[in-house]
Length: 385
Ligand code: COS
Image 1 (tube, rainbow, N blue to C red):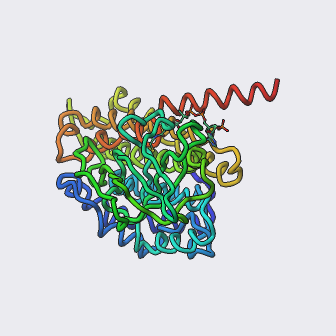
Image 2 (cartoon, helix red, strand yellow; image 1 turned 30 degrees about the horizontal axis):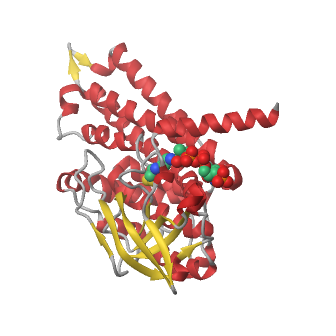
């Protein structure tokens, strides 16, 4: 379907598609097998100027927003969600600076992200704070001109591969959600170290590690925005970022559909290609409808968010749920269409099925997204009644 992209938006799609076809797809099986971080591919993405899509021009970026990064992520997700996650996590990690950082902080960090010389990561999750994000226990205490951080963050995407970390820590335990603050920690800061790389079911090209802060001292001015606003920043950051995860779902769903159709056309059983059987046709038709419906919702949600940053939550959570549940279903159906071959590593659909699962979990489980949507509906209908 035609989404009437501008010439510039079409160019983003074309460049991201070329990187996906020429670099990501040929390497994805090996990166997955070896659990290898995609340094070379991220370098190519940087060279193609795609790291600054959402960054204002005055910091060297392209000056786009949520929709532009969604377009790139859909293409990268079509190739490999592991590689795409490594790219997306850098945006997630720098969004707090973009949304709430001082001018000095933006001048320092955004150009490094745009050029691809540095990557970012977002550190919220802890062993006892997953869905319950306000349950974090990492602390930050002001000591003279420095903040001192103590605690451990878990399952941090780009952990060990990023140089800039936005870290949420408690600065006043008595204030609940208003007692958390956001900080920038650099990889070279004293008292900061990593746990070993996690072994995962899918997205194995991406790096996931613990971050350990043991009397980690950082300068006072690394506080992002105001003290006590950390949890609100987390919520806004995730609102802005979740359409990107939805876009990965669209890309993965499209890739799984493509594989299933190509296979069904050439696989002959009972003397004819299996695509001629209605049972298979109906599966493919449903997959195609679901991918296209997801794309339409994700594009619209991303455009809404770019135009109305004051009301991101519902659109963001709706597209995240819909497109990632779709990705899981479509990838599972693609494995079913390829059947025995689909289950083998020789074909890419088993990896797509493994990769799809995380989309329903990270950046807020799809159950949490439904809570957010429900709460937003409650507020809307209270306002309108
Ligand atoms: N934008 C701005 N502010 C928001 C917000 C949003 N989207 N959502 C909540 N807030 C504010 C609330 O208004 C409230 O502010 P006040 O202190 O002024 O009242 C504060 O944040 C706390 O909100 P709430 O009480 O709703 O927080 P809960 O502890 O109930 O948590 C959920 C809400 C479950 C939605 C939140 O914890 C969440 O998103 N969890 C999932 C975390 C996640 O995605 N983890 C993945 C790891 S990152 S890869």
